[in-house]
Image 1 (tube, helix red, strand yellow):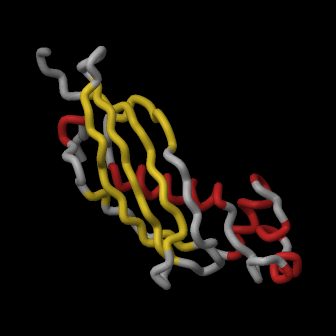
Image 2 (cartoon, rainbow, N blue to C red):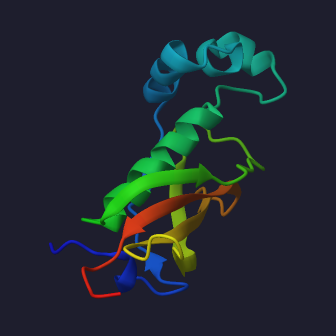
Length: 150
């Protein structure tokens, strides 16, 4: 696949992401390592919590979404990540949930001080198999432009 540059993007372009499935084992392993709260790692404590069972860490949900978005972008000439937009988590992710992402490019602008690069944002929403939104966020990137005379 050819490398894609900032110039190849258009406002509103969809990013076609693969679905994400969360297993109980993956949720618990991630949480043991990075976010060991009881509602992520202890089935009895989770059952007694306000969640009524094990849920995925918000960090795992964000990380999994990041992975499928990066994979879907293909060979993109990203120079750097610039920011993560506010992360909203209206519903928890549970074992065996399958998330579908709706992602798109937006806020495209060429750098005025360095015209060999541009700025772009990917915004995304993930919904589970019940149609419930589980995360809303976005990532800002600095992306190389095609080599042209400026």
